[in-house]
Image 1 (spheres, one colour):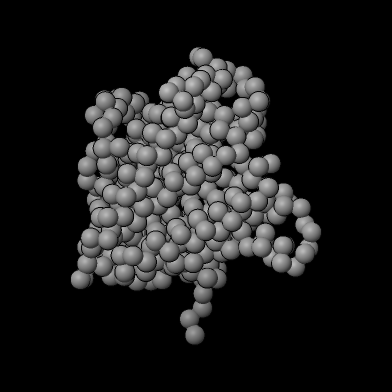
Image 2 (cartoon, helix red, strand yellow; image 1 turned 90 degrees about the vertical axis):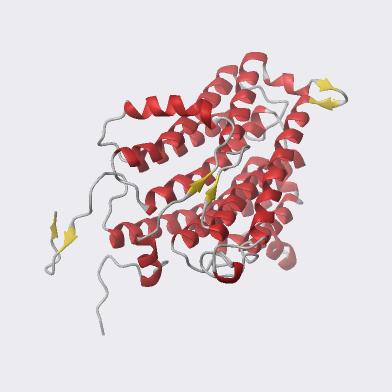
Length: 387
């Protein structure tokens, strides 16, 4: 029996055939967003200011950290997105700046990869995978800036944003081409930047202004959710029309409809939590827990597309909301806030473990580094490393 390598994971996420397909994977993109032509000159100049030794994945990670830092700042001052809580105006400005920095870093990581001849499947995974996490953070920050509070606007606004991002990856999995629409991430981020800057200049109370019988914040959300639902509908219709695989299947020659199952299961579970009092008391924690689960299933479909593998339709993160149902059925009497914290921490642990295992498998088998340029040192038969 062949002996396992010491650094080989006990349970591999990718088999040898998937890794072979991953090695020859090429990223294909089509289309351009409305604002891309405006932003491209800025991105093209900005990337030339970077040293050639900066790895593209570092830029992707920095973009995620910017989004999380901006959101964390607003959560610190207003952890429930309440309209009754005052937030310093400078905090809104900093958050708007963090979104702009994230947008800029996201716009140049691919350029830096081509500039340094270091484009890899791992780079695509970092780019889109970190985008899904940034989406969660930026939606939370926008909910606080608009002072939405524990309302359906906050929960469903964030839920729809996550579903739209997942549907884009689903479309990529079906067609084999990553399609950028006229209304895409750049436009959504620009709306967020304008919202934060408006809160910084005019104060967040401005969003309570009534216009034609509607509060201004609800008009902004109605516009945002309406555009998002349009993109979601477009992505789903393209998926249902047939894919690039044999007989109109996905790139992995699986059903084009099957990827909707993880999205619906995740949404169903967290909608159950949304109906509890814990959402009224801790809306941001609920949205964050749902966002982590959504990000994980999004990363899984990204990997399935790149490796042309069948998508695993279930995930342990989908089971975490069952804590509330078990608690109620058995009459355990555990406080819902503790259950929510357990659910959040479990989803964070599950996502982190999945990322760590995935990155280790890809870097080891493709002989690439994660946050530096060049190849990984090879192991010799006596266990030592050589460059």
